Length: 132
Image 1 (tube, rainbow, N blue to C red):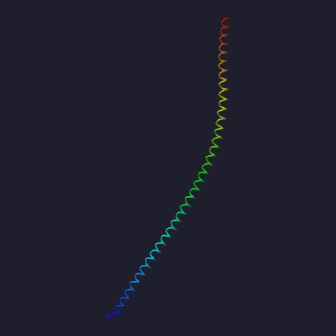
Image 2 (tube, rainbow, N blue to C red; image 1 turned 90 degrees about the horizontal axis):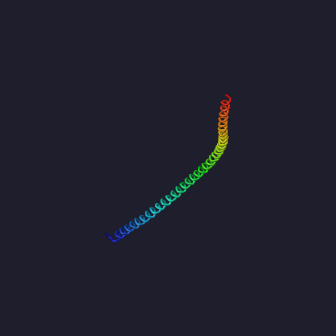
Image 3 (cartoon, rainbow, N blue to C red; image 1 turned 30 degrees about the vertical axis):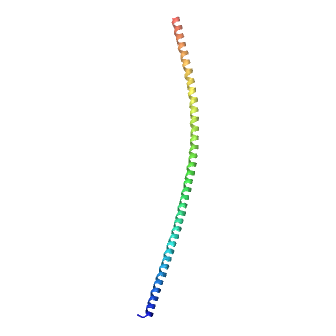
């Protein structure tokens, strides 16, 4: 083969190798760019999910705070009702105590009267026996 053909053949091989190397470098750059793009998308997706989760948590916390506030208000209302009922019960107890004290006084007086009646009955019997 003549030298010119060899030179052309070598030039063709060099061009082919250069083209392949350029293609390989270009493919690596494309692959790196795709990887960076995917990584950026993942970061955006992660940030978006984190924000959504944070919003959900804050919303849940607000609902929990509302529930606790409502429960506290309900508890205060129930305590107020219990205090009113306790006041009524105290009044009833005081009324009953007064009635029991009156009753006990009547019982004491009745026992004194029964004793006096008994003594009077004995005197009457003594007097009747002396008369007869």
